[in-house]
Length: 412
Length: 141
Image 1 (spheres, rainbow over the protein chains, first blue to last red):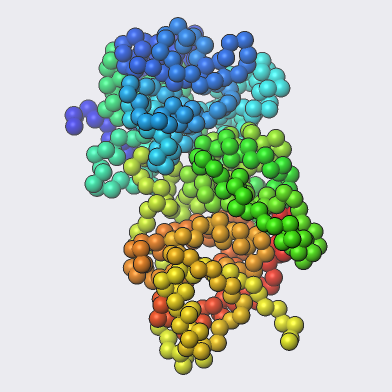
Image 2: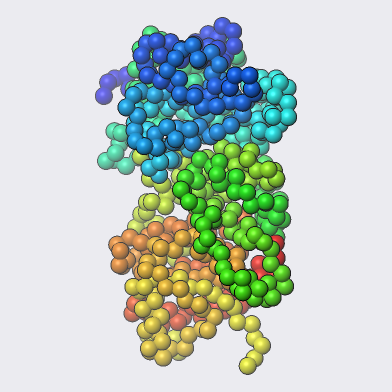
């Protein structure tokens, strides 16, 4: 414990301000080039534009020259970063130091997956970045050049341009450090020391920089060490960044509230919700791209729900008719019941839906409320247990029916 | 036979307490509501929220979850997990505007046969007031 240690329960106040010479993107990439040179990391996991296409892919880089095509904030989320990280550490933990530059929702999904024992975060430095959102895949593919221009505008306007995906437009968790000091992050006394290490080491602040500078914000001692290795002084004031973050935060909270009220109006009740999911073509893309849906075999892909033809005939007779394939609604609600407490509202499910069903919006709405009832924010603290893996003996008594011992005479 | 509507209720009962309690109610010749279809589980902690959702979406009028009283779980802590899952289900129902009255959680010990009979008939009465589950009519679900 050194005197320079930052209290993770408060928003960091000191960091390094780096002037952006040309493009923000290049400035960030240059920092990572230098970090490879100075041996801060052995390799970097970052989105890279696939040459001669408009696609972005996750690439593990050891070579500085390849970083030229890297883009830490591409206009789209092609593969959820947590999924990329998961495939990297599926067979065990990294033996070398890796830096992974991910959007806030991707980092949070990665932390949730580490709680589910699907990712080893050892030796991985998670580096987050202020994220203005991502464009819908379909919009981007329709006209990549135009979309890139729009995305530039999105980056400049922060929260005002609604050409990003709806879940991004209403996202109030666009800057991770602002979440770390929230009260809901529980730290048990035993794990306190380790838990003081937040899930991220370093944060790249773009807000408040006016495209002219970026903020490199160490969130824990490891982050500070990285800055030292980069020969950067980390005692610049972060006031500009902080002010802008709170300002956008406030704006976003308001947009989110209004948006969710409107959405609730549209989907509330079994009739309305059935109408929303009626368009589902049962492709299960939403489940396949979801970073939290990690099961090797999904219950809904198994034969557990299939019955004999005779049963279907008799059910159809009773009901008058039966829709096939069955259980569309059960799939969505069942998936929801399994993963909603860890849902980070990254929106890849909606991007992957060929029928443009607002899955991510619905899940995000339910996630807000359900997570709140467990006082849980997914992906913030590695040591905070998942709500369903944890319990207190003395809680939620309001859901139990009071018990009174009775004699048989009283009942009859 | 009368034409009075008898709801169909699925009950997930813990093997060690509620199920034995239901058995005791029967042995004690206490009248039990005919609306309950019992599915025995080894612990209330085994009840995946999915079971409850499936029951309701397939047309059951109500779903009961019953487990051991807090502190009495045969496996130490299964019922605490069940309680959390039930909270999740309740919230989910509230947020989506489903009838959360159609599900319930009770603690019933092996010696509480009368209590078993009472809570199941009370719940059955409540469901009767709510009427049949609307998904029974819904083809495109």
